[in-house]
Image 1: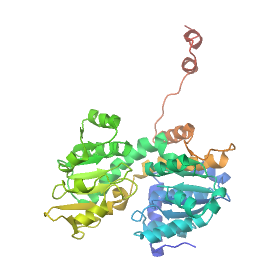
Image 2 (image 1 turned 60 degrees about the vertical axis):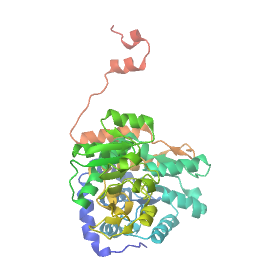
Image 3 (image 1 turned 120 degrees about the vertical axis):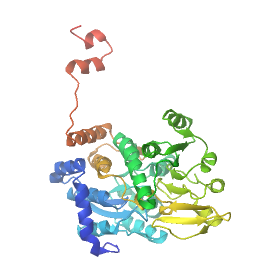
Image 4 (image 1 turned 90 degrees about the vertical axis):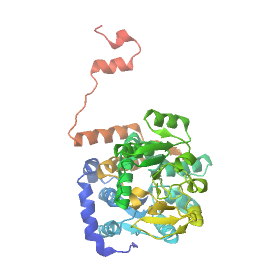
Length: 421
């Protein structure tokens, strides 16, 4: 039995899912290829993910291929009630609605675990960690899981290092076709979609502070520069800081950047990136937003202690006034701005990421050798397959190696690699 809030919104949810399905040819191709054999027949799959149209289409594909799905949202503000209703109407069990409380969120996780999953797809590792803490009796039947976020992998690798992880987890987030495209182009576009849609303000001419220069930070910074902003990057890694400098951005500590920024975007996966000493330096009118998985990168508890809440001047914007009269604005309650205040990554980008999720689940089902109870990489062939399917769907063809080129690249003896030389 599902628990949702607005079943009457199912028709709108179906329309949204059908729209994105037309723009996800790789996942559609995998469904067409594998659905006749129903590789997930008889398997229970528990999924904790941002519950919107693109993830719903992935769920439909798994269902088409035989899986029995139970789905919950991985963020209180990213669940779309119309999508949840459409999935329920499609025969998928759902525990989710937009704006759940912390208690409701935890309850939904427990219900999603309670089905006794064989396979898991997680986004942030909340489901996997809860399973280990609260339902150790169900761990033995789990064949494996896949995790698609940097934040989730940090938690899971810590579990593995402590000898606590009870089954293999595939690091989908570390696949090339995930982080090179999803993290860079997907986050880069969707973050600014969320900020601009929410504020309706011009980006050109403003100073944007991007905290963290991983692949998400790269994407956010590049799109900010493309919109005409002056970009500052804050980092703790000297190599990434040097990369940002070489890309033409200013690099400095957050305490210096705090006094200069008009718009802030955190992309680190760590906590308290913008904290008390930074709040004291912010400009009047500064806009704070987060693109990391959890709402911990901006120290909201301290912000609330230091400033008086002045209400919501617009949907998804909270105004806070400090004692000295400065007002700062927090977008999407400090949660993922691209999902709390927009629709997440473009469908064409998530086509790649969800195709990798599909292949990760296939790998866990078809692999005959025991896998270590660790965070493991998705086989490189999956990246190759997804990329090739994607470029073919775009009408693009590429070269292939000749026999002589293959010999050249595989031999250290030049005369043997070039028999005609």
